[in-house]
Image 1 (cartoon, rainbow, N blue to C red):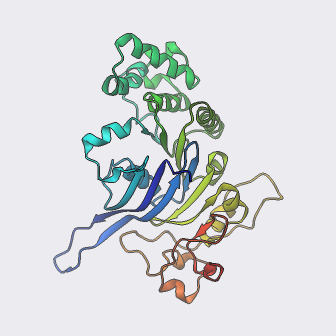
Image 2: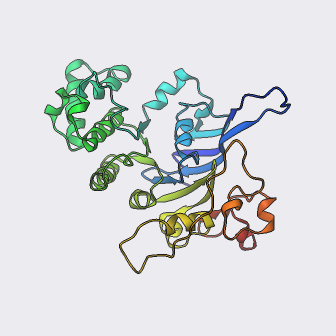
Image 3: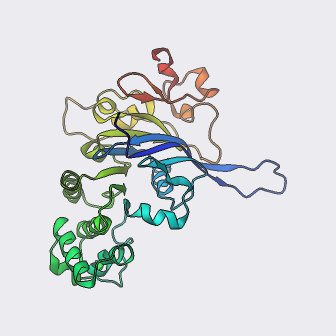
Length: 325
């Protein structure tokens, strides 16, 4: 049986809140609260949800940029969640991150060539000439030119800067790339170019992606499987086709109804959710979505639903489907 390249098991990240003078019990902000998913080689797993749901924090916890409170992150059969900073250096050669803001993630005082070369200086035995050649190859690979290596980040457009960020992520030939809102800061036309570049690189280099975004149309374009997050938990998960063709969770249905489409055949009646996402410091009892849910039942207020397979690898955490399990 084929083994996942990356497995996330019951991943949690709880931040303690400063206690008041009269408070006896320690409270926590549950940024991630029991996330589970697997990504196979050459696959793209899309993680989607509203701002504040914990999707970007999940990516950082996987890479141990923030130490998780509990759970496992299994890469190539080994749990890296307990690794020390020194041990993680070898992991970073295989797992790289593309940031949301292409300008803020690039050092404005260094040329593009130096920025891309930096991982090679730290993690390879290449000499100066070989590193320079590798930088030129990477620039060409992402649709730029070798002469761009002498320019500085402010001399590029947003889309070009993101290509530089992608080139830097590819420098060490990683197996997995975590793209954290990698196109959300770009114009729509540039978004499609960068998405097509990522798909092209995946085919040519055999890359695996964890693609994090709040934009359902973007996630649909690039993902093989999708996980929908709400308040630190995945509440629906399945293949792209199953989630988009037949969304089961009321939250997923509402998100898809709000997604713009030019096809009149696929246009759905808009589902307007009441209120805002609750605070992860004080989540509701039972199902966290029940205060905003248009299909909530009495048990939703009391019992937290488990993420269950309702058929064909389509998982949902909702009491509406308990009888189907």
